[in-house]
Image (cartoon, rainbow, N blue to C red; front, top):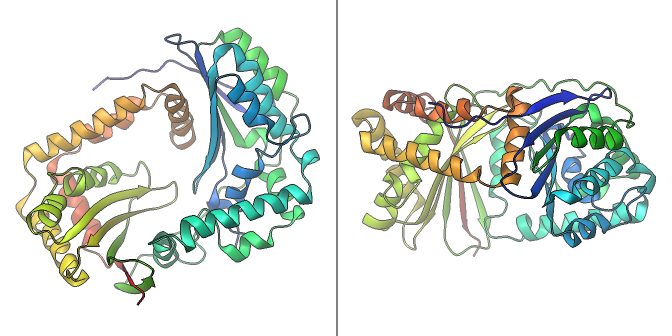
Amino acid sequence: MELLNIEYEKYKLANGLEVILHKNSNSSLVAVNLWYKVGSANDSKGKTGIAHLFEHMMFQGSQNVPKEMHFRYIQEAGGTLNGSTSYDRTNYYEKLPSNFLEMALWLESDRMGYFLPALDEEKLNNQKDVVKNERLERYDNQPYGLAWELLITNLYSKNHPYNWPTIGFLKDITSYTLEDVSGFFKKFYTPNNSSLVVAGDIDLKKTKNLIDKYFGAIEPGAEIEELVCKTNPQKENILITHKDKVQLERLYLAWHSDKLYGEDDAALDILSDILSGSKNSRLHKLLVFEKEFAQDVTTFQFSGKYAGHYIVIITAKPGITLDKLKTEVMNEIEKLTSDGIKPREMEKARNSINSSFIFSLQKLDLLADQLNMYSFHLNEPNSFNFDLNRYNIVDERKVINAAEKYLTKPNLEIRIVPDK
């Protein structure tokens, strides 16, 4: 099924920077998207969250760009910008009028090549405080905020790179030193550990010249060894009860599953849509509308480069026990595997995934990020058809097999209950 064919040009600079160019003159905008091939999986014990710290530090100025001016320059040009950190990568991105492309490339190159001269103790301490406050607001003091941390720290062994939260542990955030930050930057924030996508209303020759002008002189770093990790199978069910400042009890069920682009990854995404993707999905219809046991229900397949896990999350209505919710969920999974899936359920799930996929690519900045993602994981930026066809070739039996393969194994159960 050929739906998308995104033309691009991919090459490398002498210093190892990977460049992907996509010309699209449908608007007068350009997207600059830079992936550093480092995420929280590259953190170390005792220094968790340092990859996420850089998402903040990289906006604190570089040798030729004063503090906070990266934001100001882009926004005054009518553009938008941000960054994000995941387990596997950190990205920085701008979308702005194409006549400001050179400025965006200069800003990105200055912090890649000349960040350390502007680094000082004051900036580091300031951003450590910012991250600590972020952690307190979004995790420690947020209702159900520690659930994800409880999940991954118990689902993955202590030596697995997915064992800690991306934001890091509070005591680790407090411990960062200038030496820690400088060493991390020198190791990972190098041109040969990066991938740059420029997409939109561009002149290919001029863009290449600008990229060479601003990035070509940056020195490469040492070669980085690929992470080697093993996900140990869970041998028995694990139950954790956590008291929190919440009004309603919530149940989390998690199983080890397939990694990103693994053979069962797409089938598990379709399973999620069938179970909880809409108001008419199985668990939502059963537990929220018909029996009125649950306030809400969500299921999803988390897929990373090194591992994946499947999650069910249900918030109980007052008076409904989590035992009752768990029984209903497991019964519905068993019913799906024994009685099968209706053709209209499969069609609806595929249509939902297809439409979301196509809609997201109407946005230039998301398209640029997708090119970088495919290049990173599949070594082929134009993998749009491959990705979409993964779902179109999944049949009912494949979904049932995936459910039986993973969701009948021992699970991790987390119960968030009111702290009275």
